[in-house]
Image (cartoon, rainbow, N blue to C red):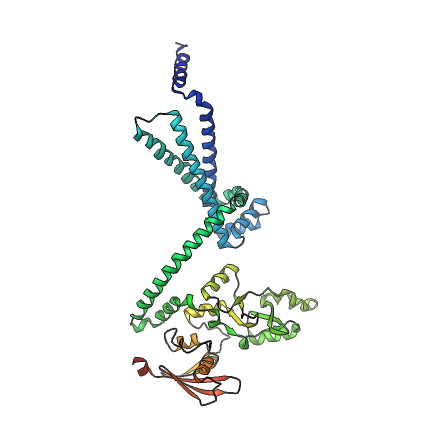
Length: 455
């Protein structure tokens, strides 16, 4: 009886020799080892994907505070060169590794099964074993189990995988670049196509809405529909209206100016406004108030300016404000001169209308005389004018040329600098100059003829 197991083992070995499997034993062992390695790489990469993209703001702060090498690499993966691009690069590298390893597992497993078993007479069984079973194993071992674990141990997985993923990005850089370029091209194509359709449909839907109780909501919707077509130049604050500080200003004069203007951020220039050195955040100088020896150090607290072209679209600028975590940009023309500034508040006002705070003066913008009569400041932006008078965007596009304000619009009407008492008519509007000098128009009276609009 004791010799039966030995006899049975010998019988199986002889059968393997006859079938040719024993002669391929080295290849079988090699394939099994390779499959296990690929499954392991796929498993830890899937865990890393779930771990990195489930990090909370608190987890990220904890990584920044950790003074260990892996945490520093993790922050690089999440933030360099910026959060959006870093996220795309990280996802692309993880997907590439996962797909490469899974492909190798499928090919190697099929080869291994074909060596051990012969399914020539039973192709259906071969298909089930080679495809369905292998797929089940990959999904279970390389997807479900690691992602469940990573969800519960995100920081641990991130610290383990940060360094390998960082160097994997370097090795896979050509593939990542090709993948990101392809997806960006496709995204832009479909985004543009979809946006055109959406704008047309939304404009039509808004126009056919006639419920008077929804006027405010309609105005917000109109602003959102046209948001991507508005350039910075249309909403910026002109350099004539910007409060700025000369770099040579004394600390006492600086405090006096801050108290008078009430702004939290002020541009700093050297010699003239075309040479902006940076932006001074008022909160940065608070530590200097009680230190007489360091009051002149306020110049070292100036932050670098964010300079943008005048024709940048405000939806792109809003994304940049969000990415860079800033609230103000300096608008430059094509020759490098400074046209003015634009703030996050200016962009939000394009959607929600004028935002008032305790420092705003209502009379600086316009005064409503009656239902159809207004007195406007000449510097009022055309976009603001259209919102106040509840007129559709683009009403003056055919005539306004490069004008940004209603004073500039009046000059386009008359083709010169109008004098006090001059009038102009366009569509339903009657404009008349209430106050002007040789250099600019201060106030303009506007009368709306709704009957002309109906016609």
